[in-house]
Image (cartoon, rainbow, N blue to C red; front, side, top):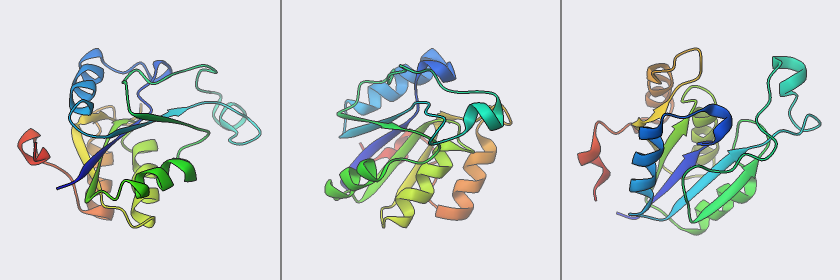
Length: 156
């Protein structure tokens, strides 16, 4: 099975657990990997005005990936989705930060593009609403169906 890893917003602004960063980096060494980094531009996404928060202006991915795409807002860019499509994967393994927001937005974008997004819940954390990521995993299962149960499901 041809798999690609999509890493969502594992960057300093979100203060990810060190173990999460290490485990995602370890997995990224086994397959093609793509990461997103959320940056702030108030004219594109009104985070500061509406939420009183904004990501760092120069955040970078804490996980080395084959390609990194900068995004403004929740969803991956069209360029990132097109790149993933160009790799013609059987499934896109998704992990990272904010299971119930940015990770879920990635799932919708990948699904709508005809890809097969598959959540890696043990390599995903939730937002401040549910840091465990359980809410995001339940929403993912409901909308896309594909949630791995454990490392044996990675098919490595």
